[in-house]
Image (cartoon, rainbow, N blue to C red; front, side, top):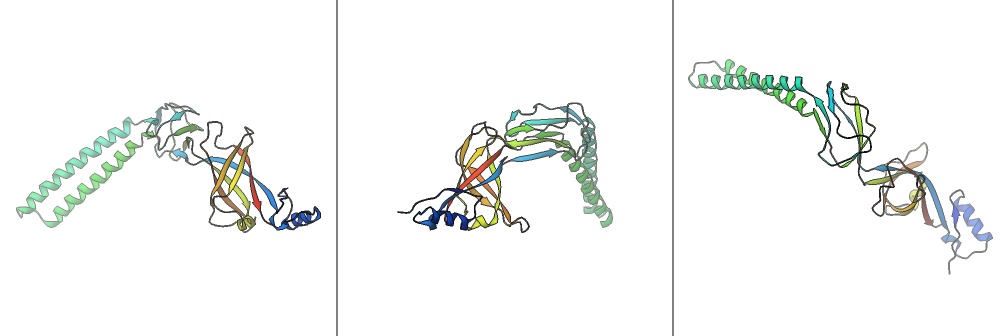
Length: 255
């Protein structure tokens, strides 16, 4: 019957094998070892929201830590100027459309040259493009939630003027969490997708079961490490939050 000798990861496989022999255990080629690394909890959905507008904030319905549903309005800008410009360009596009239709009618009567017809068509296309661009800008006046979650790191307040490219806030998805880990690349000999692990959260002291869900596509040749991602085995309560640190403990059998 094979015995199992439990050691921590600060010993090499050769050292574990020697200790096993000294202890007089049978089945030393089946030594069981606990390997531990540090990890971080992160949200599966995590987004920093910025804007291309230079506009004043009209209202922010939610505050830091608030829950929101997909499609909820997270921020609304005062876009009276942009809407007025959009109406103006729409009117110009309508005038260009009428001019193009008139040019087509004249062309059917052989009362206009081909160049004039093409010019009218180009003017209409240009006016439509300008109108579409401003309408797209107006749609940016309201920022809606792309997924359900919580609001984090609000960096602007009501009545402040946003700067193009300025981060406004960060969103994290609600309930969908993963674990990021950096492990030694030699572990790939025994560490496979689906391998179980125990995740002990520093902030709460509680331990949760998890499994390796995927590994990175490449090894860091300098540190000889590789990033892996683990998924919690069961749905979590609100006690586990993105950013929490943990000890990830793997158990492997072999020398």
